Image (cartoon, rainbow, N blue to C red; front, side, top):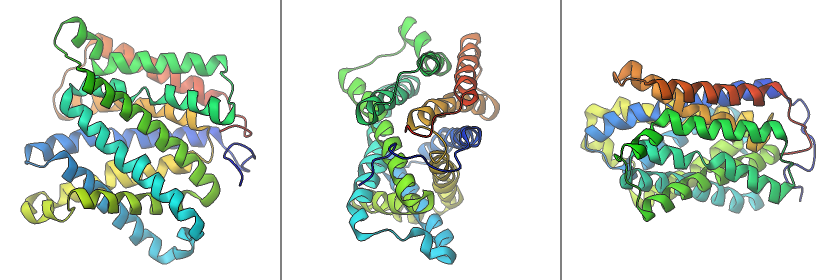
Length: 307
């Protein structure tokens, strides 16, 4: 069995991959807007996680019907996709929601975006990826930028943020979960293609989350929110995950994870535009650092022999 990173993938285009990840990050950033409105509507995090996965899966299934061959995978690959969907998508989402329940959004997001560091470390262990200077600099820029954009540093200094030990564990667990999702995705896309990877990961994630909370109940309980619930499963879910999987055909997993750290900056901008939340000077500095990290990563093509 060939491990991801042992063979070159023809047709790699790092700039295209970078653009796809940035597009995915921008769409993921809209999740906060959807979540804020739906939380106010009385929905629980587990319910929303189940709806996201189920609607996303149905959307991918509809797209797959005219091209059914694109989702065919060997039966021996199904256990891998079960682990990918349950551990890399469903469990990761639930852990992140648990972190959000125990601390502020800004602190939870900062802990979530330890994911690039986890990906770099795991890639070094699994595939002996080198710690190139530009990648280390980009990682540091991205991590500092995320801390500033989310306002976590200011909250801690002002004594307005508390971080319990369970919140810390769940937050770091979410970061590790996001890293595991990225590595699963890298292996899946190189072996089975982006579309099959999206279909089967969503299928197993939707099945697992449906056991915890029915994805149908929220629609029946609140028909007025139907369009928002459907959009939740498409705009910040199916579309960005699809773009991210395609991007992994062109980029190292660690590079993709670092580029995705643009998400908090986009989320802050959306909150300022749509929710009238003000941006301070430190947040603008943080955005600049994240953009600088993205430019640094996108300028240098990633060698095809690594993940």
